[in-house]
Image (cartoon, rainbow, N blue to C red):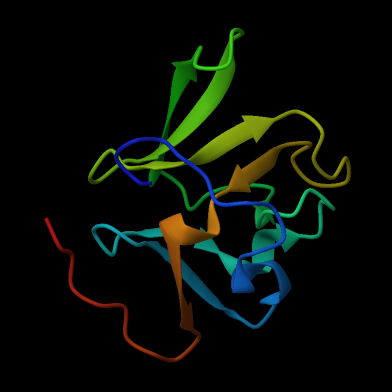
Length: 118
């Protein structure tokens, strides 16, 4: 999924209901990409965040479904994380990072983040 830009079915990721304090890391390389403090329930069935950790996610243009979308990739290893939309919370960034749950691993606050896997 991470290298082929696939996605899991909506409402299947255990991260959908994970609101505890912690960090989401790239499942491929262990780079920290999201702080769970910026998570919100978008109702889409995928974990959603209003922003990434500064400098950890790169944007690209994805035409795979016939029109341009903003693809989000891990800035460390280039793995596909999801897509960015302009329908996020208006009281914060207005952005919705719709992320594949299989692209992330949750590290609870206070636990060590694993070393990068390059």
